[in-house]
Image (cartoon, rainbow, N blue to C red; front, side):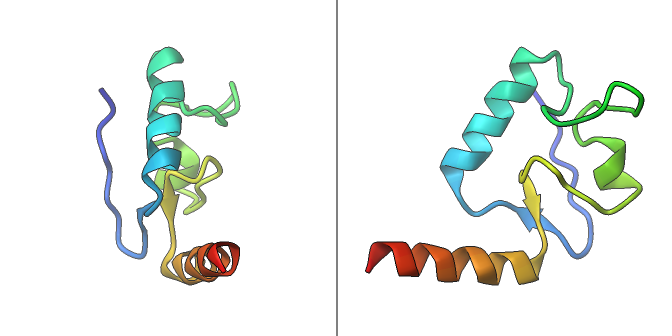
Length: 78
């Protein structure tokens, strides 16, 4: 089981299907982030998220990205 690491300015992706798929990939990869480089500390949450403030896999998103995701979802449902 991965530990959810909440940090200011970030939230979990609001799409459950994305969260579930990423968690499955992490669990099948011994806790390693599915997009972490071998040269960095890749246990989820990876060092890019914790230190560099970047989430490559999409498990965590910033508020401005939430607005973009919401707009994309409403456009697709119309």
